Length: 288
Image (cartoon, rainbow, N blue to C red; front, side, top):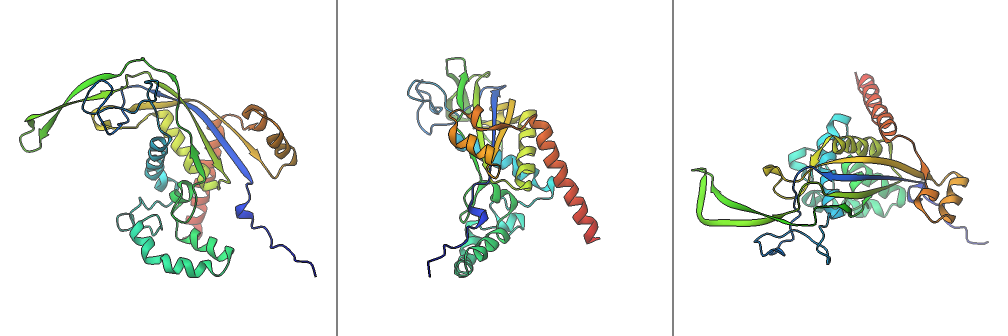
């Protein structure tokens, strides 16, 4: 008898991809620290590429978006562990200490097959970590490094002092300076989301609405640095279950040809958020 291959588990198929493109515009000066002396010989430099242009790392953007989604998750009735089970009360394997306690259980469940493993991961991962990734599950979301569109072609240097928290005065001899990139910098960013759930789309949509309204990223944000907003948002995608879309994606060369326009991004994500809130209301009514 010929060997029959095992059935394909749908959870591992690439079924859908959503791409969001937008422009980040800095309303104030900002800094992503390099951790070393700056090009201007200042004490605290900013990250620059080999051509002396500012860099907006994808890791900084993803970290900020995660923080934004953590803040908004409860408004959508979704769970977030805040990477700390004791502080949040939400059991999630992204908390290193909690994962150490349940790691053996995870290994035992993994021996029961793929379905058993996926069920365990779903039960031990908060909604935010399902989107952004955890030690046992890859992230569904990827964010590109910002592609520079415009900037002032100069890095500014500002003075700083260390304050005594008791006297609220400057500490003698502890003056320093630091670099910032001037306001007006613009970067194009791309977000790719694979196989999103309805909760993923509602959470990401809420985060995008927050960014459009305005947020901050980078160092010294409590001093007013790093204020930005997102604009010119566009959304497209591909449904790999649709033969025509699948063929177009596999045979075309440019994103415009490969992906289908999903229309107005606000309309798209408003529907996802409303769907999530309506579902939450229905669940609450059933429990009552």
